[in-house]
Image (spheres, rainbow, N blue to C red):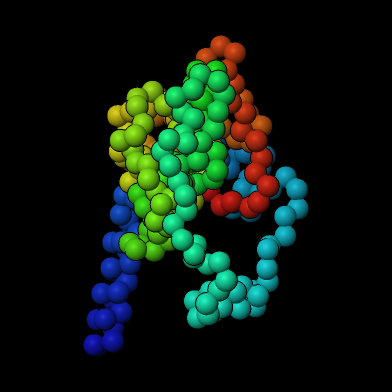
Length: 227
């Protein structure tokens, strides 16, 4: 009975934890049907257009994880704080520019045709559902949501933690008028209180034109991402 009680408490804790708002919400009903009707959706997940083999076999993954957790991996941690300066940002220029602010991918912020775009903003300090894990390195997180003015256009590739951050999006909610993302991600944003009217969700190779002459094309990814 003691073992059973402990097991039930653990399972209940897991259930409650994974139902926290930051985990978002997966498509259901008509929205799920829309996802399943995509020509890029097969066998329960989105598939790459080209064959993309796994980066390593199961036994190799086990060895890599063991070495990462138990040995002093070279270059796992920067030897010193990265030289980052807010003065290096190019966000205030009128010409097309990009600027990295420590999140997602290098093209974190850009300005194109007068449009201010945020690509996969992550300003929470960690890219994981577990506190104090996958933390950003000191010096790489000097920006936060307060830095950005209204009317920027967030663009999200997919719903991995280092690309779609609940903490960041909640704090940007009052500053954005439109959001662009891949098919299947809209439900997360609606679950977090964003109006469905401002969320533009598109499949690969689909085009949306938020303003005349300004187009956003959803290009296929080059690696497997589960949405």
